[in-house]
Amino acid sequence: MTSSPVVRTTAAAAFFDLDNTVMQGASLYYFARGLAARKYFTTGDLLKFGWSQLKFRLFAHEDAGDISEAREAALAFIAGWKVEDVRRLSEEIFDELIAERIWAGTRALAEQHIAHGDRVWLVTAAPVELGEVIARRLGLTGALGTVAEIRDGVYTGRLVGDMLHGPAKETAVRALAAAEGIDLADCYAYSDSVNDLPMLGAVGHPTAVNPDSSLRRHARARGWQIRDFRTTRKAAKVAVPATLAAGVLAGAVTAGLAIRNRNKD
Figure: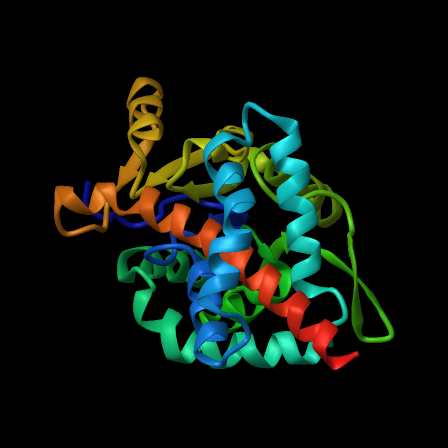
């Protein structure tokens, strides 16, 4: 389905998933690529530590142990790092690898919301610092993302709350709406993934963007809007491999940064 103007009479908010919705592929994958280019981890680290993240991407909905394992690995990823360094690297890697992968159609939707006076938020399982950089560079209001504890400008290796994935996205969106006095019945949400059904179902105007097959079926059954900005049907198969690759590389990032920090000690 092609893009059509956002139509409504009152200003509200729009919530956009990031990976495969706003950009092609997974943001953490490209962040990891940028770190690899800077020698923050090796191929050996990738093979050794990628498995837990791969399991999380494939089976997290079935096994709480895999979620816990992935969470612990994600914490090692940032423990001991300065927040300013992560933000600086996010800025550099956005310019190098992410900017050219922003879907023009989704960006146009976000810009329509902004033109109507809506607040526009990214909602992503990626680190909130990465999400905030992307949101700012796209001219959006801000980002909701996975939050790591910070003490004296340094990551402690503990999360604040849960990874922003699945139902946690709905919780975050509801909390933001309550804090800002926004009626979710007037709001919009956009995602490519069936994992985001809780967030999509929480708003009055859900839209499936570049949807996976399960979300496409769900959207059709409920009469939701479907927007597909991919140029070929083959592109529909890209999302899963990109997400799995992100999981593997996230494990490598975790390992490489932990090893780098140990070597500094």
